Length: 115
Image (cartoon, rainbow, N blue to C red; front, top):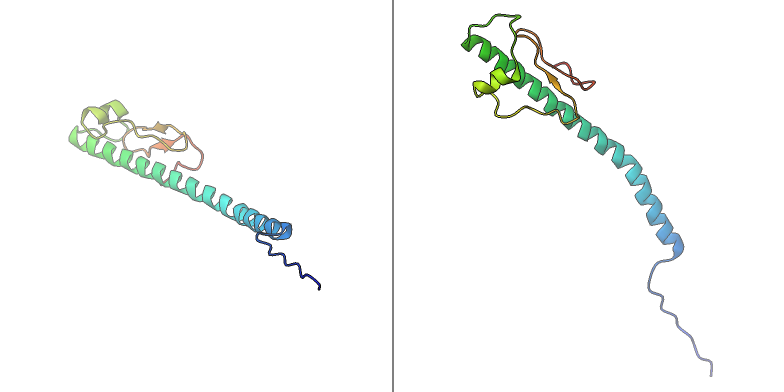
């Protein structure tokens, strides 16, 4: 009598594994740039919000202390009147220039200047 040899193979072939790896690689090449773009957009949005707060607090300080356009206003002035408890930080590494009252504050990081 002839014996029938059965082989039950459990697992994946090399071709199947390589296909899964290539599909994952394609997904990563599409997803990572979009994730980085979203991350930078969030940083820019946070910076612009900080610039708006600085401008708003400068105007409130000017009104409370009878300051006019062109008068200087620094972080220490705003901190002394409890507008800020600590210096706002640009998440992209820029620094804020408060400028004079009536002037728009700016960030040193490129792309974060206007609001």
